[in-house]
Image (cartoon, rainbow, N blue to C red; front, side):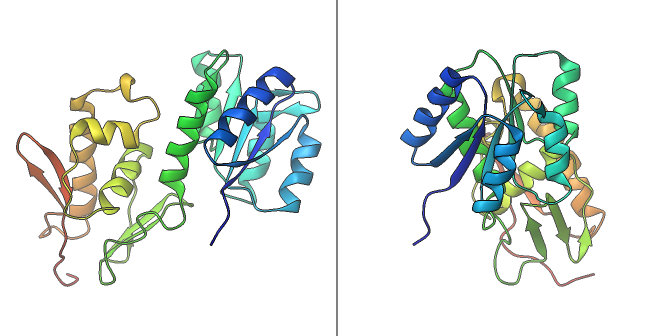
Length: 233
């Protein structure tokens, strides 16, 4: 059986690092904590890491620069920690390829919950296909999806919604469930936000196969992905 997911924490403040190690270990993760980017590079060469919790300000460099470096060679998820909560810093971090962003001070339990959410979305086996014959294929690690062999151009949240729906074809997900599973901060969005992204996701799928109704609406309940598919157009 595979061992626990290995998490690398890159944080130079001992009290914060210790609290994160405790919280993540309590959740069943295997955790290694380092205080510099140099030590982080060494840790990444020793063993595979499922996620990096990365402070932005470190003694030997910027976490933003390190994330950019990581993205040139790996798709390992990154959760930023920073004392800077300005919108521009958040935007920069996410545009560099980070999967989430937490501003200090924060609850270690919140970070652990966000780590679990990221790993659900990016698990290599998560929602690769609805079944053996589905025309929908998803590469969660690379954030890429194809429908009947054609790549889909999806926004971040459209892709996450597709991953959630494809993980259980036929299951009806309520709007609140989709918010919890596809948004980093569900309280920052609304039911109509889900509706808007579902509409755009439907349009992207129909642009490939107009005769398909890939996502069904169950009135008063939510949305579900189709369980069966027609032959290619």
